[in-house]
Image (tube, rainbow, N blue to C red; front, side):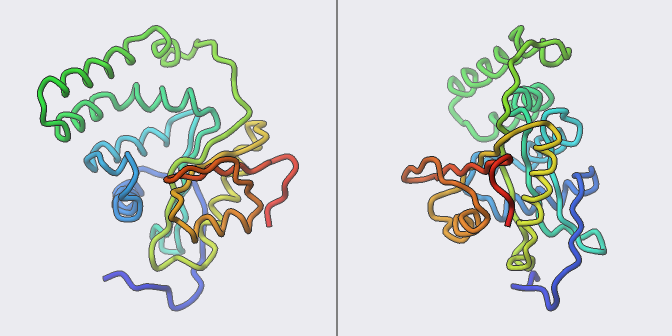
Length: 220
């Protein structure tokens, strides 16, 4: 049974995702991020999604672990969002098709969605990405997509450390800003971003977009 908090402040190590972290990460994702699109897929598809970030040259997943290598939290991002999304699609199309088949019960709609995915995969643009010779103008804006910490690790600065480490990766790729989206009702997360110097750039009924300036803003 998971407790609400740790008895003492944990020793937190931030590192890149490894294959042996995937099972715990998928469980954490589905338990803490149940409202997003990725969580609507079966765990096998989520597993493949994160596994791809281990080898993607355009994205990453950071994990926070304690001294016993127990997962405390994670954060996924992309230094080149366009290329990373295509890279993930190419390497996971079988899992995506299977996930679609288990979630869409109308046969005609299932076939339509599957054909759309296959069409994207077979496009010359995606083939170029896969072969490493696609000509795309690189962006200087990174994106953070999914992140969470365990219930017991909340309040110990674990997610802040993940954010700081992600900034280091973004700067290594000469990016000047980072963008993320958060659900509007996640008031605790929004308060954290405000405190850390993130700037709210847009807001809708369901989501808020925040931007962090890597050149002009210093982490708190």
